[in-house]
Image (cartoon, rainbow, N blue to C red):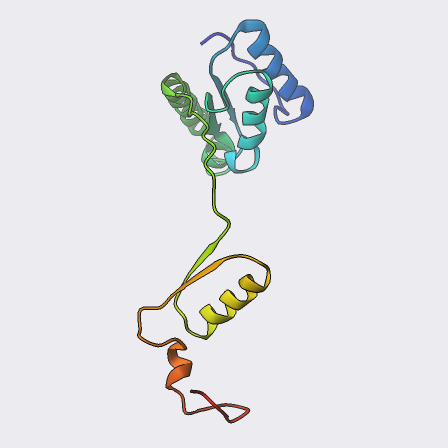
Length: 161
């Protein structure tokens, strides 16, 4: 570990700039942020790493907010000890992180719909009307699902066959 910082608003632009500058100035190769939920800010920090020229996969987030502060609000010492252990675990995990190569894979713009009941047929028609190729698959010998088994359909009393 090269550096540890305390910042009240690491997710803010100035906080992100501190991380970016540390990566560049100190030639850091892994970043651990111990703060709030990764659900909200993990993508933000990964973008910071990418902007600094570091793989976004060399980032580890430790969720102290939900795992310590919120659940142990009445036990400050216990929350602190747990936070220390979680940060240590985050640092250990960061040491093992590897970059994931990005691949571009061509994708055919088409849709497979499984089930040719009334919903499947309507979906197929809606997509086909938008110019999207549709593959409709049905396990039975006929299409229509349950609708094809009905003699009459409420409220119009139309023929279901």
